[in-house]
Image (cartoon, rainbow, N blue to C red):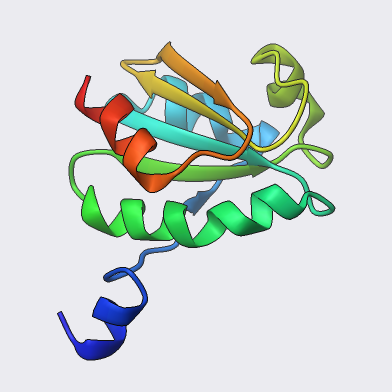
Length: 116
């Protein structure tokens, strides 16, 4: 890890962009473990979570896939998963929701949920 990575929390990886049209094939039928970040463009807490999601996506690369879904542009998945506000994290394993979190979450807490 270089100095910049150390100072900024470690290596980063962008989450996969998800949409109504691709969500079922990618997340539900694609298998594996997912953390899906439901976010909104006018949500300040969503913006504050971006660095954490990017750090975790790099840290768990190969074990857990991280995706992001913008809620206003993807109302079908947003409604289907009962997302009422942003930010919201939905944890999916084998196509089934295993956990959900609403509101801003710390990296430590998200990692505790992943370890459970």
